[in-house]
Amino acid sequence: MASDDRPIALTIGTAGHVDHGKTTLVRYMTGKDTDRLEEEHRRGISIVPGYAELDLPSGRRASLVDVPGHERFVKNMVAGATGVDAFLLVVAADDGVMPQTREHLDVLRVLGVERGVVALTKIDAVDEETAELAELDAAELLESVDLPAPIMRVSGATGEGVDDLLAALDELAGGSGDGRPGTLARLPVDRTFVLKGIGLVATGTLWSGEIRVGDTLHTASGKRPRVRGVQNHDRPAEVAYAGARTALDLVGVEASELEPGDVLLSTALPPTRALDVRVRLLEGAAYPLKHATRLRLYHGTRATNARVRFLDRDGLAAGKSALARLSLQDPLVVLPGDRFVLRSSSPQVTVGGGVVLDPSPAGRRPEPAWLEALEAGDWGRVVPLALARDPWRSRGMTAEELSLVVPVAPEEIPASVANNPDIAGLGRLYALASETEAARERLLEALENRSREQPESPELSVAEARTATGFEPRLADALLARMSGAEEPEVSVTDSGVSLPDTGEVPPELEREAGALLGELRKAGNEPPAMQATPALRLLLKRGQAVRLGEELFGAAEATEGVLEEIKAACREAGEISLAGLRDRLGTTRKFAQAWLEYADEAGVTRRLGDVRVLTRRYR
Ligand SMILES: Nc1nc2c(ncn2[C@@H]2O[C@H](COP(=O)(O)OP(=O)(O)OP(=O)(O)O)[C@@H](O)[C@H]2O)c(=O)[nH]1
Ligand SMILES: [Mg+2]
Image 1 (tube, rainbow, N blue to C red):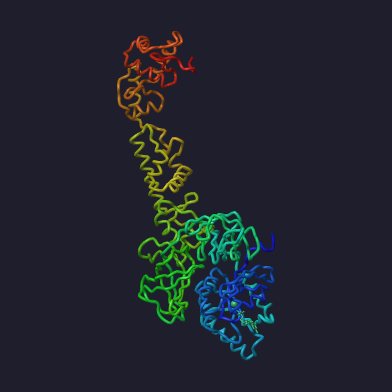
Image 2 (image 1 turned 90 degrees about the horizontal axis):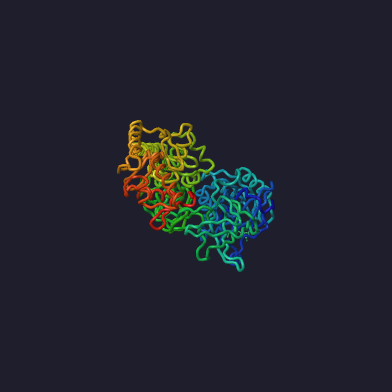
């Protein structure tokens, strides 16, 4: 494995007030200048997030996102901070905690990033007393938001303390487990550009999953770009890992069809304009949040306007949280468990954020029971509630589909629904046990009705059986498979259709009726009486004991044999047989002779040649 193909152990986001030394520290640690824009150099500040790779002492690989500190670029900071695992909060020892030190930390907390390190930097430029004051300041800030993190004195100019800082980051990387949940690849795009000879390139930090050369991805607008090339931190690679700075060469999508803020996905997901969420107002928020307030919502690399409507209150006080529905101005691709940041537009400041509980709310009004179960992570309650919703009620859900509704990885679904009496597992599908039982009963009833009404052919076609369950085909088929595959099968599924397993036995009454009818037909011989196709007659036809001669004309099989032998004999003698010839030979009327000749044609024994019949080649 090439060194650049190692998975990312940790994605670290810098944070901190403008000019506090973030970019300088990142450059010292990685050797890379993350201020790549000319304007950034000219103005001496960062404007957009910059990215660098960090080799940790243990050999682990981390991805660093260096964000701008300037007040005007907090929105860029939010986009950069999305998808990071840990923070590197930079506080200049000569300046202490400043407004964006707080705001960035707020953004990180709202995004659920609660592990990190504080770098008290520019330590080379201050005396001990100043350093102590700044350190106290930082410690107070951490305490005020109840966030324990080590504070390390460093200098991006001299390198003092940087080894210890790296060791602390390494420790964070070691404790971060093995990667991110889920196999769904999600890349929030932060830049797109066209390279001569290469085509459209999209960059971003891969949130989850992996992207490989040759993969086909999906956009919210239904485009399906193919990945022609992958770069990890500016180096060509075969695969992009979660957490890595990723650039993709894409074909099958125009530059005008993909923009920063879009999301590239390995599975098509529908965008949504409504979210049911738990929203939280920051402790430091200046005003309570009123019902129906419009705020700016940041999710991934996308921002849009959102109106906040509470489920059960008129307003939200600072430091408090509540269930709410957000109506979005622009559609977003969101999964349950996703975090978002809320900022007010005047003043432009971060006021709170929250976590998405239901990204595709079903009704006009949020359902508190459903949201509370989702929030509590009570999958024993959530999964049945999800399965009870349309369209899943009649379709069932795979583990993958469930994991888009419930924030649980597909591979963990089986364990989280095991032994739940409300859930039925049908092959790879999960369905409500009560619905499954009702569908099973509907099917059995339909089969019983059929065998009562048509005892001679008591099976349903597969299509009829599916319809009878009331389920959509995939779930109906899974149910059929379970019912027929059980130790004591409830139905049997064959080429001829679906039937009750004991339908080999014909009701005795019908059997008697069929016996009498057969006797009648045999007695009538070549001249059977006209009759309707009754169940008894259909049973004889099915068993081959009778044959159909015409619309309402049926003969016993023995008579048929006899007549066909007569026809064959006549043809062998004379080379052909006419209607009159057969009539005379059988001693019957024209009507019956005609019916028998037509039957012989149909049976492939004879074929018509002008006014006569000759034997087909098979019987010659
Ligand atoms: N003496 C000293 N100066 C530093 C140190 N770190 C940064 N500086 C100086 O502080 C100024 C700002 O540093 P940057 O690294 O650009 O600060 P920043 O936090 O990235 O700023 P923004 O990205 O614009 O928020 C520059 O002039 C740096 O040379 C340090 O450790 N010691
Ligand atoms: Mg900077």
